[in-house]
Length: 250
Image (cartoon, rainbow, N blue to C red; front, side, top):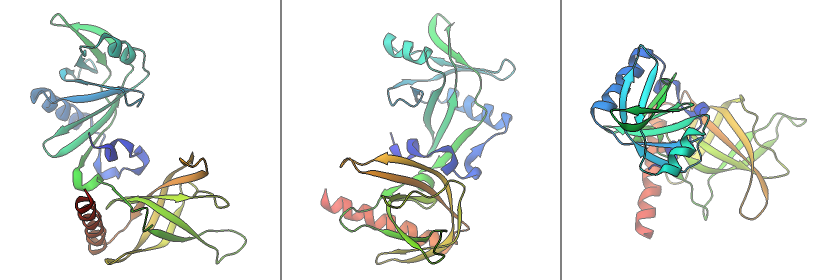
């Protein structure tokens, strides 16, 4: 399973890829049921998942019925969850949605779970969400002006990962993370041996974390705004370059 898709927060996902139309959601789920697509479901994003399939989509009754797994203990964990996090694939498109809470039902004599239909559903192609991890030995640095006492203050953030949609930034004390909701109007990032990108940068999320060394740090999830197509192509070239380097080292 592609972990880059799982780790994207809802705030980091472009609204273009979110389905909110009831008719579109029902049609997508019914197609997944027809295809007998395998769906990975975990309880409250605990990363302890089971594989299942959709048995029925009842639009009028607002119910989605999924098959119970062979592991009784895993089924009990799902039943005790407030929400279930589901990921599957439709063609070359990843599909993600949140459902729950589940209740136990029988479907044609088989154990199953019934949940309300999801209010939204995310559909992303691999190229739209794939994130490349920036090299540790040659860190990619983003220099961002921070509003404060000194209007010219520039803070250096280490780029953790990058995609055509945005990037993850790491800052360590004495600097704090970026404030969620912030829009940086003139963001510039130099991609080694590729070129520079310039656009607006939005900060949907930011949280404190502890590194393996025990040092506190802040991770900020950022989204590119109004990134020109030619600069999006530069980001993709940089990602391709990182992947090629990883394959050579393998």
